[in-house]
Image (cartoon, rainbow, N blue to C red; front, side, top):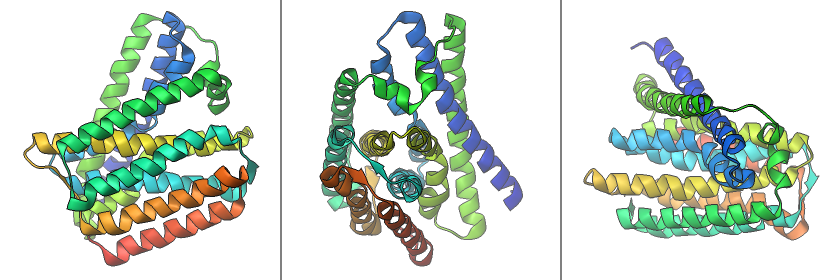
Length: 325
C-alpha cells in the first residue's frame, strides 16, 4: 500500500469514527424525546460517553489485534491532547470567569484516577483486576455526574443547544441511528488502526508515537468542537469541565476495558517505562496547569492556554526525537 492511499484511508476512518459518535448521540437524544427518559440523565451519561467513543473503539480494536502500542498511545495521547492542545487552544484566546462547582468534582476525580493509574502501572502492566477497579470508578463517576446534572440541568443545553431542541422521533429512526453509529465506529476504528500501523511502517515511526499524536488528535476532535461551542456561549467552566470529564472517562473506561481484554488474550496490558515514568507525570503536570488556577482563583487565564500549548509542543517534540515508547 502506498503512502497516499494509507493517508486517504486513515482520514476516511477518522471521519467515520467521529460521525459515528455523533450519530449515536443524536439517537440517544431521539430516544429521550420518544420515551421521556430524563434528558439530564441521557446527557450526563450517554452523551458524556459518546464523545470518548472514538478513543474507546480505537483502543479496543488495537488490543484485539495485539497492537498494544497504538492502544496505549491513543489512550494517553487523547488525554494529553484534551488537557493541553484542546484546552490550550480555547483558553489561549479566551480568558473567562469560572464557577468552581462546574469543575471541582471532575478535577478531583481526574487527579485521583491519574494517580491510581500511575500506581497500577508501576509494575509496567495493567491487569484484569485493575481494569475491573477502573471500570468501577468509571461507573461511580457517571452516577455522580448524573446526580450533579440533575441539580443544574441547564448545563446540558449550554453545551449544545441541539441537545435541548425539539424534534420528531420514531423507533425506526432511533434503531437505524444506533446501528449506523455502531457500524461507523467499528469501521472507522478498524481503518484508523490498520492504516496507522501502515503509516508507522512507511515513515519509520513507532506505532505508539502514531497513537500518541495523529490518532489521539483525530479522535479528540469531538471534545474540541464541544469546548469551542462552550467558550463561544460564555460557558468557560463547562468547556474545562467537559475536557476534564472526558479525561476521567478515558482514564477509567479505556484502561479498564483494555486491561481486561489484555488478560483475556493471555497477557495483561503492557506499558513501557517511558510511558509510566515520563508520560503519566507529564499528563499529571498538564492537568495541574489546567485546573489549579480555576479551583483557587475561580478564573481561567490566557497564560494557562499558552503554557498548555508550549507543554504539548515540547511533549510531541520529545516523542519524535526520543522514540520508541
